[in-house]
Image (cartoon, rainbow, N blue to C red; front, side, top):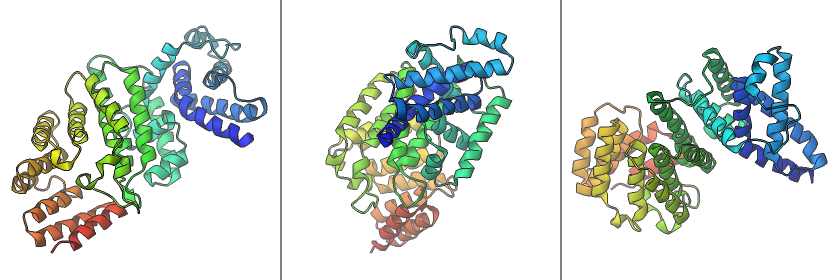
Length: 406
């Protein structure tokens, strides 16, 4: 019975921890202290729930306990008079069901922008977001990204100290700042998703749990910011890409490339959700365009039905809106499928040394050369790509492609 209760506590914590921390952060104005208080409430649950049973509203229970402790902390720090004005109606006898849902959602949105603040490094933003908003433990984050647990712990501690030192306000940015800050939030979520979708290193081609964490964060953000097109664009992109999960690996976990996948194994429900999210994006942005590209693939029941001409045009639009060598690399693939490998190779040659350590550049070049019958050069490119990648599954695939050439 105790183990069942502990599993219930774990599930509740994953769902409710971000809201609890967000509500506390508004009161104490310090993300680090807010998380400590939330952890205290979790410990109280671990002590009481196995003995007394899970409360009818466990999220509200955690919120009530943690806010009482926040008030106690404020009193101990002898700033009771000033801080209690910020706390407002909260009292030590606050009921578990008294909390305003709209206020909690506002707090959650503020926490999203604090955890993804540009004052933090990218790695710190990712770790702190998964910790505060994803409810993951330090060990889980470390295993997901194949880094030592103390490294992740240090990133999180430093991130909290940086936020406190820089006095980052616990608020949602407005006006022009919102655009810049929202881009940082979306970047963090998509970085998490991409690490799950195609792991940078290690023995696994995918880490689906990370994709699910990113999707959950994206869906929450879409509910909190329903008028932001790029939020819906990112959610649409992740939903559609996640729909391919079951088809992206073979029986032994080996990678299966897009054109070789069994499309009957694509999750049509996720595709439907993605297309619905895409309809809600009423303006064009980088994530919306990428979602449009993913939708072109999703609508094609067979590889031959793919509208590569439209995909090429979408990549051209994306390149003008958010130019980058990676976008040009993907545009070269689309052009090669629409107009022939020689056209794609011509664009690749224009990239020069823009992506010296990016293994997908020689991988794509090898594919185009192979299609042109230049097999010796193609083999060299596949082997170069294999030497650059840190993912063991991908390395084997590239070596097999090199060895399979005549």
